[in-house]
Image (cartoon, rainbow, N blue to C red):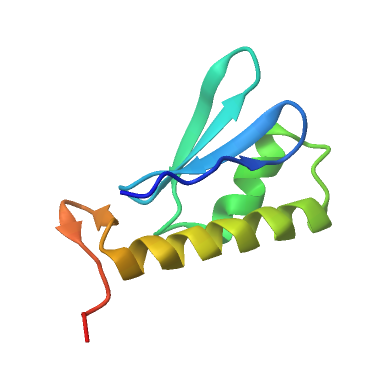
Length: 93
């Protein structure tokens, strides 16, 4: 499983994608403050971010989602992603 870097929202908050398709939101000095399924609820991710950090702007949210999309694609390709106990890797050629 490749280790993906956390995606910074600002100085306080960051998101990390894990091998079960969940996005974990962490706050500096506190730790994990929220988690959600990225794989199933991608459209709710901006609301998830804003609920915890109302100052997040559209540009920041877009940049965060692009980075998470890239990481998700890598996880699917390498066979690292397991959702609901099933591996959802792309079929190997």
